[in-house]
Amino acid sequence: MRALIFSGIVLLFLSMNSYASDSAYEKHLAKGVSALELGVYKEAIDEFSSALREKPDDRTGTLYLGIALSRSGDVTAVSSLNKALSMDPKDPRTNLELGIYYYGRSMFEEAGDYFESTVRLAPGTEFSGKAAEYLRAIRKRGGARPWTVNVAAGAQYDSNVVLNPSGEPLPQGISGKSDWSGVFNLSGRYNFLQKNNAEGSVGYGFYQSLHAKLSDFNIGRHLFDVGAGYNLSPVVGLWAAYEFEYVFVGGDGYDSAHTVAPSLVFREGKDFSTVLEYRYRKTNFIDSDLFSNNSDRSGSNNRVGVVQNIPLGKKVLFQAGYSHDEDSTRQSFWDYRGDKLKGGLRAVFPCNVLTEFNGEYYRRDYKGASPLSGDERRDREYTGAVSVTKPISERYSITVGQLYSKNKSNIDVFDYSRAITSVFLSARF
Image 1 (cartoon, rainbow, N blue to C red):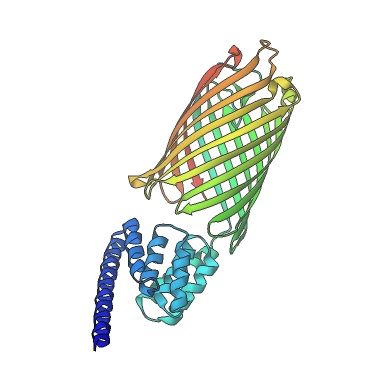
Image 2: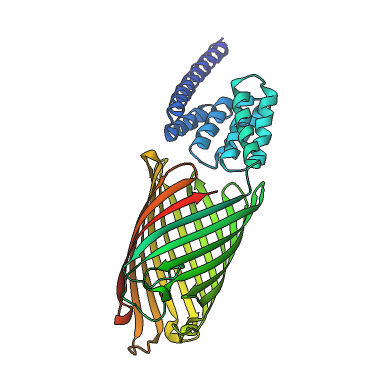
């Protein structure tokens, strides 16, 4: 008799505990669904995680957790979604959500498989209708032109005409002369590979400036590049690029350069990524009447760096980076070690107005004694820039920009400031 009473008490306790557990699960699940519908993904993730602590193997809670993680851009979403699919491979909602996850990561072949499964499993439903929309978008991408052409033309006022298109100072020192110039830039790209996790493209660019007075400083450039990338996983990507550049100043050859630049990309979430970069550049500077000792700068440059991309809401992206580079040339007084800090903010305002703010601090310590002063040169360069771009139509846009740069050097001839005001009309074909 006592055993029966004891057994009854145990069963009653377990029943009450189970009821309490079910109640807590349902509350967390309901709160999570509400947060998910409102777009408060962090709260939704917390609630669904709490629900799964009450019922660890619940398929509904697992699916909703995967959806919330996917919407927040968290790459771990695929684990929850795959677990939910393993519990019910024929569930159209789970197949749809896996398709959306892979579509968001530009893995269109994988996404298409899940969308097609959704259409097959639930024809005539809201799920299949949504999947069909994504399938049409994927087919449209596949039928898109593999090439693009960009043309930009405009004018700029330069308070100190000293730079070539790559942003490197001309070697004779600082002219201190200002001038207006017309600028033309043509670039084209052909995507020869876009499949699964791999992509590849080849590009060409032509730049030309024509000064109103200082025609000896007209800059021209030809740039050829080829690049390829591969997604090792949804989280890690590998990219490599090669460039050949030829620059001429005043109609004469100025330099030619070969550049190899591999990088490793870590995606921590939607638009949130860390990029590890390496660049090797071999440059051959060319002597001319205007730059008689230009070839003294010929040599190589090695640079390593890291860039962090941080989204601040849907329409604002912050970027911060650091790099270290070393230049080795024919003359020791051109050799240097450099450290650069940079930061930038990119924001889209109402009417699709794109505004970009960028700032840099670049420290260069030269190794050999300068023939101009007998001292080892030390430069500290500060640069700030802002640009505003307004689309005129789907194809055309106009950009207004302002740049200011100040270089502080212990050698007077390299101590300068510079301001550039520019306006460009761009077209994309």
